[in-house]
Length: 130
Image (tube, rainbow, N blue to C red; front, side, top):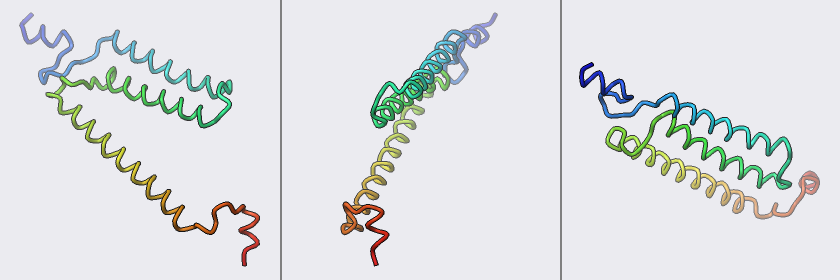
């Protein structure tokens, strides 16, 4: 076996990015199943009385599952492609956070500033307005 064939046989491609082994894929699959089953169980059993708490816990599990998928299935790390894939991911996340936070800020302030006379009114009160 030549040096190039031996290099490819150990799970690396010519570009330097690592390919997963059967064991790493099974670890990723197992973690994905657990990170899906636990939130499902939390909802089905009603473990948390407050729906907001349940939603935040599910979102935390979802964030961890995203990381598991990126590491075990997409093989993203700081070494692949000289770190550029990680930099592109970080840049994308920053843009998404800015966009979502800005959108929520604008919607909150539009609701607060455009309808000040409707604060505290019920649907029944609004239906009787002239």
